[in-house]
Amino acid sequence: MKIAVYPGSFDPITKGHIDILKNGAEIFDKVIIAVARNSEKNAFLTVEERVELIKKSVKDIENVEVDSFDGLTIEYAKKRNANVILRGLRAVSDFEYEMQLSQANSALSSDIKTIFMITKPKYNFISSSTIKEIYLNNGDISKFVPEPVYELLQNRK
Ligand code: ADP
Image (cartoon, rainbow, N blue to C red; front, side, top):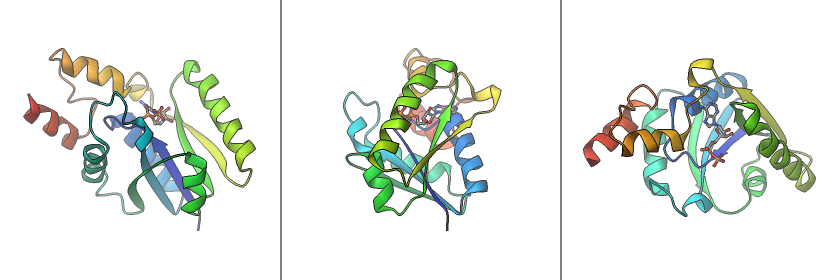
């Protein structure tokens, strides 16, 4: 059984994240999307809110599990018997950081490989921080986030 962990802040989850997750779910037997608890600092949503929103957004994808974790991603991946860490790449600007992270993880545990996926062009510019900025300035975020995220944020206004 091939298991991938898809880690991140997901503050909030976007359609770009969902795209990567769906691709992952087609390739691996199981994908565990996991919210990093150390991303709580300066966060927009609590980890519990983020997990809840992800659960609602991915409920139709059978082989996806939603979780959160503390500490190092690689330790979490080992604990969950994962073979792969899944990450998304948008632009060249993501590359350097992601390369360092993946090489550090591979130095910590060479058994677990990092695999990168490139999102569809229409999701390329979407980031959680851009979405927060648009939302906080009363722009329309409905095209960029899954329905449950849109609803929660609308009700919060
Ligand atoms: P982190 O804080 O770990 O960067 P994010 O929640 O911002 O967490 O992103 C999690 C993963 O999803 C990262 O691999 C990131 O590159 C990827 N990602 C974020 N937005 C997109 C997008 N629009 N398309 C594809 N991948 C994305």
